[in-house]
Image (cartoon, rainbow, N blue to C red; front, top):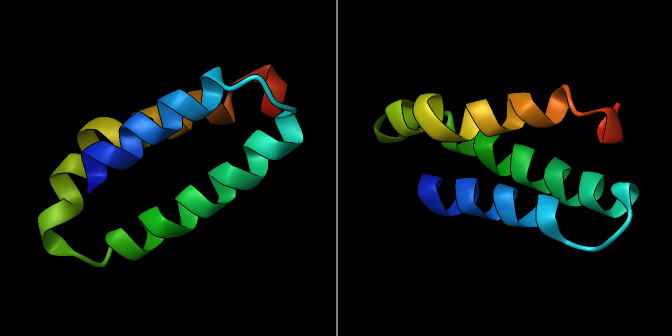
Length: 64
């Protein structure tokens, strides 16, 4: 599940749509990640892949 979310984040950034639309989708993904954070088996995957991609997005001027 976490790998799929990580891939989804990467694909969203490639879409040809507005920054506002991308941001709305990323809010939904962030909510999903919040829920997964409560699942002990997901912690290592979240830490190694998905969180890094989200941090890259947070510092992207397109979304600031």
